Length: 284
Image 1 (cartoon, rainbow, N blue to C red):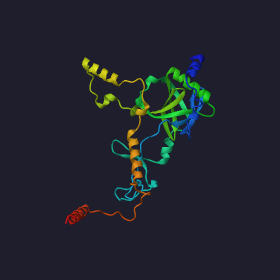
Image 2 (cartoon, rainbow, N blue to C red):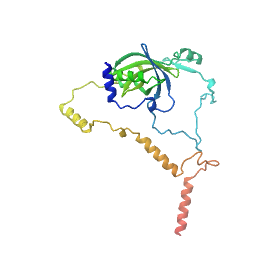
Image 3 (cartoon, rainbow, N blue to C red):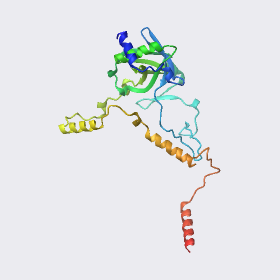
Image 4 (spheres, one colour):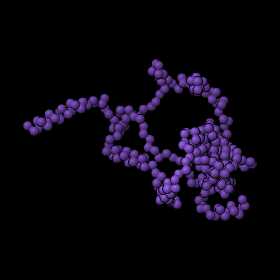
């Protein structure tokens, strides 16, 4: 690609300053994109956040509960120091692994995203993508970062790399869009199931009427753009409104409304008999 073409594409994009200025907070990981003689320092930030409402498991008085390991034979609790890691084989045998052995098997610590190959974006199925991240330039690498993003986007290529994050090695795809580099951790080949291995029926030629009906139904719902407001977690919104309403009605449990003493056991039959007796006395 010629330098004039890169400059033209830059002028066509909105100038939003440095990518790093758009993201606040501490990076999830820091390192270097490396390939050939090129090294570009970058920071890695999560590109997504959960909108789900987290509900905790509480006791009868609202106290938070926790899960512990215990021996099913004796019922006694186990400390972390008393547990070991193990792998159950297909024959039902268990092979234990020590922490020292795990450390020796761990990938070598590195701060490099080693790009192995650049491929056409159409070569990668979305099924292989696992988790999205945003890459930002670090240590005044903005110019090289932008150049790499522009060339990758222009050529519609994706970089495939490996890198180590928090003691685990990941396969990752580096993508470019709107002058910004993104990283998508990928599933390995044996983690993606073949659709034909789960019993899909054989293809049959549909009738012309069925084809026309499907085309008509799709065109009726077709839009040129996607309204992102439709991509909301409506269940989470309903849950938050419900929690706020319930809190306003002072029906929460726990620290805000602690119980004193054991909970009273109510005999519903006695309550019903008492109410019936009171109603009969009032009529007399």
